[in-house]
Length: 265
Image (cartoon, rainbow, N blue to C red; front, side, top):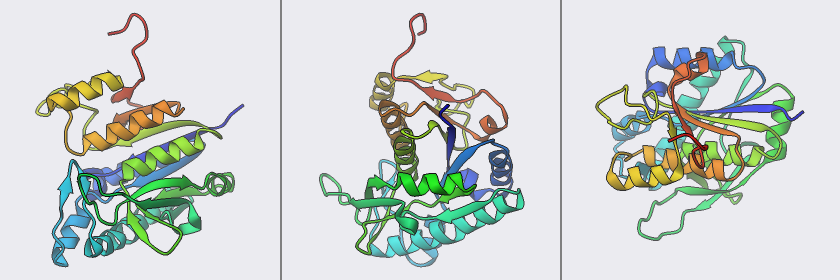
């Protein structure tokens, strides 16, 4: 019987606020079986970068990364955020191992080509080291992965954490039955941003495109849903966008589906 793997991507305010991240890590530690945690840095990279004189530039929820920004995000994501998460997971009895894509050559990327926007040192994933990740999981390690990748020739890249979570899920779906959960500070994708109770229970890709065109879905939610649907199309078993409560048994959240089953909306 094929084993199950849970991949949790966490970012935004959940990473920044001590109580919320502590609760999430506690619940993450209680998940049985194979699991991987992928994290962003919330606004920490922006805050610390500004203290270093690095001003952020964003396009559709994605950070433009010049050389100074790359230095800042590497320090924050791979250092401060990653090691804080690892140490707290260890306190919960989870044998966490902090990694970037360069460590053990687990995620290779190439510089994003310039089309309409020059994203600078932003990497698009080209390979996930399925074998090495499986070895870590089989030996009881829980990878905690920062959104920094490399090209194999010594160049680091800033890579969207939602993308990394999706690419990991896709690559490992040949070996595991994968559940991918994007955790952020809302209960799910909202029909009305001002109403936290307007959670969309289930969303197809066609509905996503309509909501993106109308502006219902915008900003950082766009790459989250884009990568989530890409994972669904390439064989990932389940993708959910929700808050941390889903880890402790709540059924809230937005489930991504390729199409609604007959009889549903």
